[in-house]
Length: 461
Image (cartoon, rainbow, N blue to C red; front, side, top):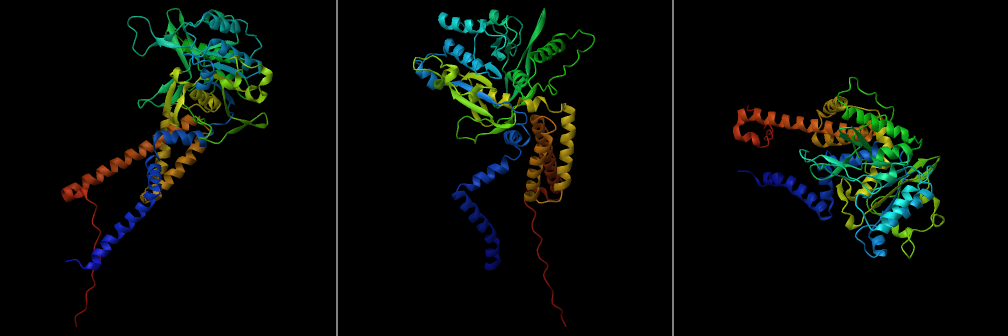
């Protein structure tokens, strides 16, 4: 029979631990600690860390989002969609303020009222050749032909097609975000190619367009055209004897790069971020309600009434976040309207496209090296010490690899290495349990008993 002091010794440790956990839980700290531990290797946590630590803001593009939000629609009498004369006025304002580039993230495939459509058509038809480069979002829809796959999409015609063809500084873009199985947007497509019997066509993404025209060292639109032409030949011309030469730009044409989410929805979610541009600090992101740019009659204010630093030398996105737009998605940092997802991708596009290219084999080899280093360092450490070492190694790897390769590639390497660590830990646990089962049977599922202290013996004279 165990003595009372023995029982007290056995119960003291769990009682103290339970008291500490209860104290932290009362103040809500236990959930935070548990969440941090559980999410150490979680994909979205790595995505957020990668965005902050891996140099995603190097050569970043300053972005201004002109948001046709609920307030703007309310001022216009709650129409079902934004009037196109308002859109034309906002485009004219961005061009007059000498934006570095403009992207219209709105659907123009369906006809509106004759007067509204005419206002937008008139603006596009008279768009000056010396105005900022302009990209228009091309609506994509299901292929209208028998035998097409369910996932196949095709370009949908627009009311602006005939007008756009006459302008060298206006092009169509495909704004496509990749939605994972859990319905979360984490990646974007650099371009989308459509093959036709007479050849085909490739549409650039807004990110590719912005990286050319709005980066610290702007490039001509001919570089974008050379890239999309090479993509069309590579995908739609499999019968060509020799592969087409890769265009010199971009350095890292990662077709499905992870988005470095730095811009959240709401002014209070994160502190303003500044980047260095032309020797001065520039706000990375500005969001302006279209209502603030409208007069009491619903027209757009004159360019003289708008401060220069709001639009000048910034990439301007004109999009909508009102509920009727039906354009919202889950992301690693919460629910964002589509235009804000584009803003995140555009702002950090130079860091992705200028990184050292690395294929799947290279990612695997570096992840194996990182995995080996983690195992060598933590093989003789207790779980708590090993978790701290792994966390420090993850942060250091994101900082180092993100400045050599694209930030998205750095995140992929770290996630792959953590997956290897988890897989090895599972195998080790199964091996240990199987080995003990042969000797102890079902008791192998229990914690091993602590060895009893050796009892001293008295010498008998």
